[in-house]
Image (cartoon, rainbow, N blue to C red; front, side):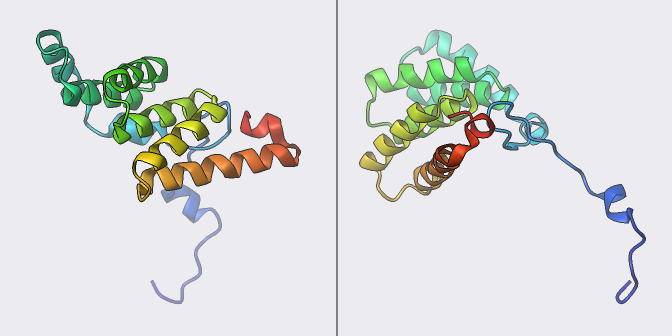
Length: 151
């Protein structure tokens, strides 16, 4: 009701507090959200189709994204890297692999991948934003917060 003062602690009853789910950087990526978003079924169907269509890049993208969404970052990175062997200019694969590197704490590799994606697609919002965040972590590390950001 307008003008009414909220009781202390009332917000805590209704708000959902999320602790950072990245042990390396301490940043929150909200694993609970990724796990709640339906995508696992599509990824598993794509994985089955991939057995009979191993050269289909779209299926490989779906499986890689499914692995990422299930916090299987090593497997997602492997799948994205496989895509890049045959499609080195695949910006979505570069962005996906950069995200995996971030989650695995390999931040220098992440920055290199964002740069590579930007060379292929200079106006990619995903790559621009990812690179900016990666550099923010790097700057924090240079200022003496290495343990907090995992660089």
